[in-house]
Image (cartoon, rainbow, N blue to C red; front, side, top):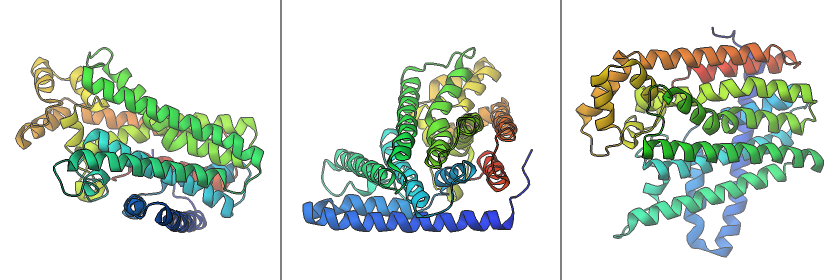
Length: 361
């Protein structure tokens, strides 16, 4: 069930916040560019790549969760929460750079990913590009820390908020590694356990990092009471899982011209997504054999990739996954109704739940 759109004022406030976050990130990058130029001019390529990827797109959903968590927790709009939101977004840039190296991706935000753009000439270009992208991601990570720790709120609130910032990163790394292990060892391909493993990956990879963590960072910076923090977490957990499951669907069935990402990568890498788990659970023996033979084969021809997608559709795996996304979004919205928030924040978070569940990019 889709939420009613928030008020025009709420939409205008959110758009203003997005612009101010972008401006804050640009200021931070300019300052760090000057610093890096004095240390090692050659390393300016790393700053420039962070800037390129940041400017290339993105919906700024994570800063918005931080912002509305802050206002919902009793905070006010101002430069401090803008800077904190900028930190959340730069952390996302860092994660994208590292994620693309692990996935050996070909497309990110409509262009080659950072490790391919940084490769340069030479026989060692692949390993050089990967190393450079890892360093660029590390640098973005450091900038994210700086933006949050120096956002201007009372130090005791920043310390508590940084605890949530730390937790969201630990969970994201744990989920990412579980994703790698599942693809490598085919753990979770057992139809009786596959869906549970896929949900665990989705919850860890995105539940805290994309939704719950930013919400709690913003609300903690506002000094929100425990009942608000707990309520926002109860809203964020199912929505974060829905976020990742929807992302997996778009990663296999989305339009690359809209998503800016290659839609074959998850199949070629053998990612154990909910689509795979449900295809094995709902498909017949023939479908399972095809999945066993083709998932994770990087030399898979285009027509065989399409056959995998067909299995996901015909078996009912695609519709089953989309239905789970809808159920999780509805659960999040129901949890949100129990949280004592200002009406504007509650309406905005309900609309964000809709955007997460029904987005096309």
